[in-house]
Amino acid sequence: MSGLITVTGGRQLSGEIAVQGAKNSVLPILAATILSGDTCRIRRCPRLCDVASAIEILHHLGCRAQWEGEDLVVDTAEMTRCEIPERLMRKMRSSVIFLGAILGRCGEAQMSYPGGCELGPRPIDLHLTALQTLGTAIEERSGVLHCTAPVLRGADIVLALPSVGATENAILAACCAEGVTTVSNAAREPEICDLQDFLCAMGAEVRGAGSSTVTVRGKQKLHGCDHQVMADRIVAATYLSAAAGTGGDIRLTKVCPQHLTTVTAALQQAGCRITLERQSIRLQSDGQLRGISLVRTAPYPGFPTDAQAVVMASLLRSRGTTVFVENMFENRYRHVAELRRLGADVRCEGRVAVVCGVEQLHGAQVHAADLRGGAALVVAGLQGEGTTQVGTIHHIQRGYADIVGDLTQLGAELRREDT
Image (cartoon, rainbow, N blue to C red; front, side):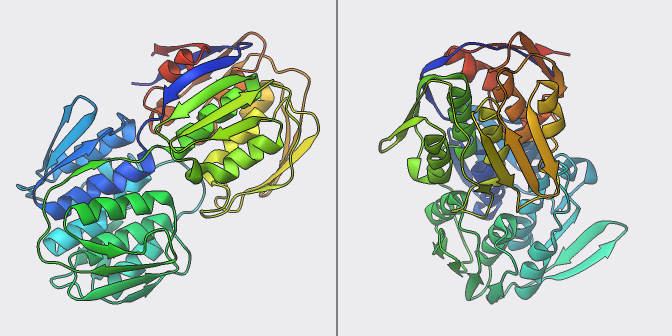
């Protein structure tokens, strides 16, 4: 079910809120439960549309998953299938992360190409090449990938790009391969560290996550475990951006400040006061921001592409100009046309967007074209005069468990209406 989020602008934010578990962490972890052949408890699992899609995939494979409060308990002991139908693959791009886990567990897998946000070409050739290096035979017939690997063997995998998904798929498959696998030019995102922690809790031997080289020693048998998902750094960036743009004083808890240094540095440069503690971030803003130096998205530890849209939205009323360069995805400025409906002055050419601060934004009817762009529209609407209605919010629900409830708790005025 989709709907609208109606935002009434003009309120400063204040208060304290705990940040939800990370979408980009829990999805590969849910895939990894397949390798255990046992029961795993995922603590602080966010209730997201993408998580619901992952649960559908697990159920289709013959596994069990049920909610117990904030925890998701997954039992993969009775897994009966090794194929994922097209209707489930199309629901989210992260569905491809099940490939490495299914291969590791079953020695074969069958699936179509994944769906997800339309952010430009995101081929999965790096995933497939990594799995082929481990000994997987892959044949495509009528858009369906037929993968077989009766025996996976450890190997040296060198990724052409530090792809997060390809790194995760390689690690998952390598956990059941004979011998040692080394993944070079690996992605360094914190979510990969969380996956490593989860796998090690299941008895796997994975080392090096967070660096450009990850080493996996394959094992025949893993087991269940109990794991708490890391905080979602992009949700944290969204709420920090909202408070920065509206003005206010908020404190985010259950979050790792080290995961957000590029975002907090940008907001600090814009005029916010940032206080970092061990597991919390406090932001104070008078709402009178200034333009900042060039923002270039890059793989971690660079500025995250997922935070580009929400930080841009926080600067729409800033004094001066800010230039964004999007280096990760071609279609990451789909929110810009909708921001203009609110009175924003943002000009795009290719991978460059120039934000010229305006005196005031005004309410309008807008539509979310993708997950992070939709969140950016909410951040912008909080700053506008009057009421903003954000439609096609199913995109937002893919990554935010309760954006309306969270922002309301911080003093914003907004409501969700189902349609």
